[in-house]
Length: 97
Image (cartoon, rainbow, N blue to C red; front, side, top):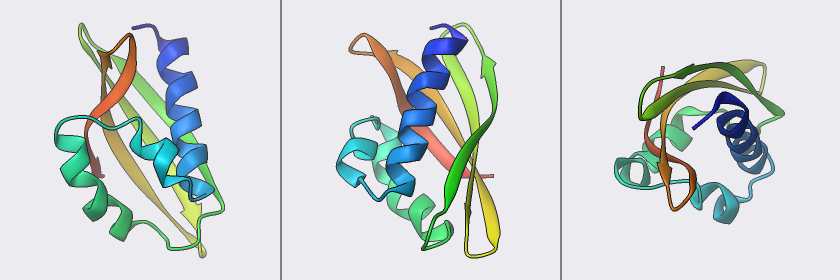
């Protein structure tokens, strides 16, 4: 995985979450991330105004992405692990930082 590809998918995922398209956002999840999603969503502002990918750290087989979600006068950062699955990056775990 290269940084540009991970960034493209992470930005698209953030945009899907902001617009409330949980079908598209859920399509990026695999493994532990499927179980963690509900808890992460509960910790985000209910009304989201935006999302910004702050950092991407590439490892050998995984990329760690920090995305800040904004809304209701506050923000939260979600740290997610992305791995190559089915020919594209997918989120395999996530947590609110």
